Amino acid sequence: MNYARILFLVLSLLSTAAYASRTNEAAVADDPVAEKRLQELSKELRCLVCQNETIADSNAELAVDLRREIRGMIHDGKSNAEILDFMVSRYGDFVLYRPPVKGITMLLWGGPLVLLLIGILAMRSYLKRRSQQTAALAKPLSVEETRRAEALLKEIEDK
Figure 1: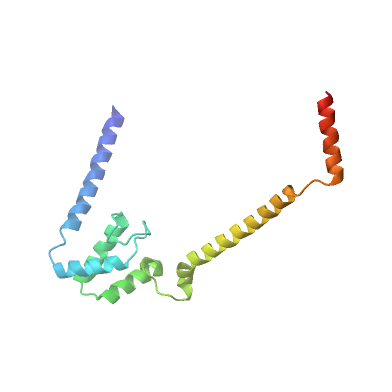
Figure 2: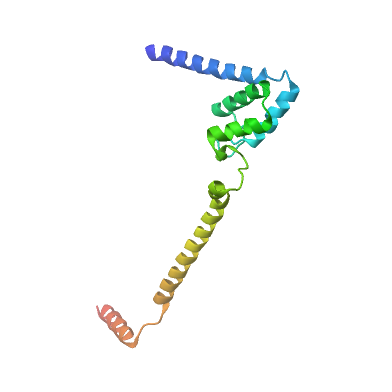
């Protein structure tokens, strides 16, 4: 009985927190210009939890917090460049959905290509070894091996 009460209490608190964050999100459409700027900036920033979504598309708690942070900076009169600079200084270039091409971000830009090339080379090496093994197994028997095989077959037939 005690567990049911605790479970009910925990679920009630969780649902209240989720409702409160959605209410805060919905209540900001007061200034359409600021909201449009928020949407533009949100499409430029990667959700650090989801990683394949912008913070505009993500419902993760961190994305909600980042949007709230951006709203506050817009309200304080910061420019888009200042907001993006702040986010990059806080989270690094990875927070940008399209990070700039520079020495430190080359892994982000070139990493997938390098992994693809490594995969192609590994597959080529594997297929080459496999074809060599198959060719070695498929070569005909020598005269001695043929004689031994026939002797074994004759021995089996005699039994």
